[in-house]
Length: 288
Image 1: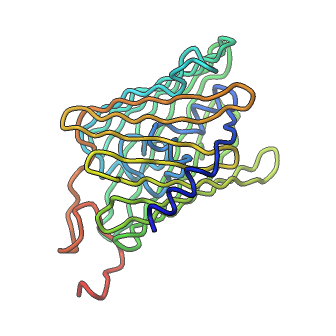
Image 2: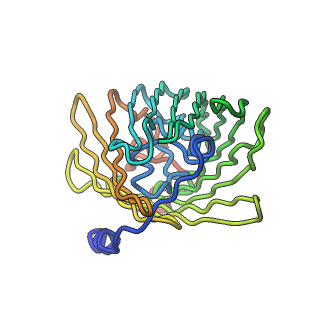
């Protein structure tokens, strides 16, 4: 069934991916090649250092890791769109620089903290300092919640730019669900995001991550605008993520990421037969 679902999405075709202005991108679109390859349906997945901007509640499970990422590796739309992501759970730091072909430049530095809950509910918060050269400069903050409903089902919620100063951006909200196999080698995720400007609107996102072999993962996703695709390679020393999306009227955009370190932080396990990173607020009857 996993292979059938993956094949259907992979052959559905590449559509278009829409980019906003540079300031909106760094504030609203998050960071992470793996997450982007899954259509940005990452609010309930909340893994790795990229969770700082998608759902900071996930930082409680992140180990010590560093990522360097390029979100327009072929320079199709940007002269520079790169990020440095550092996490030493439960803390994280992300630095993004986004410069388009017209020279419009925005820079963001974000700090985050995630707290593991003892009843299957984690929470987290970040603070983002952002400035656009020749434009606004200020800060904003996101708040995230991650609910481990069962060992294989997670819900996530993130309030984006809920608190801010010096900026005139609309607060937005994201909610998501992620379904995992017991071995965590297959993830099916879905997000919905809400924006109130210029009027109340919503966007749907879907994503799949399938570990087809030890150290090899295939990914795909869908948003209101596009199909996205990706591949992940994991070695004992270096991990690489690669993604592809299509921009309307311009062509393919390539994304590339290199990671050092172990992004998994051991979680105290309340279920003796479930993997270390699966704990939930509902104990399955068959484990009683």
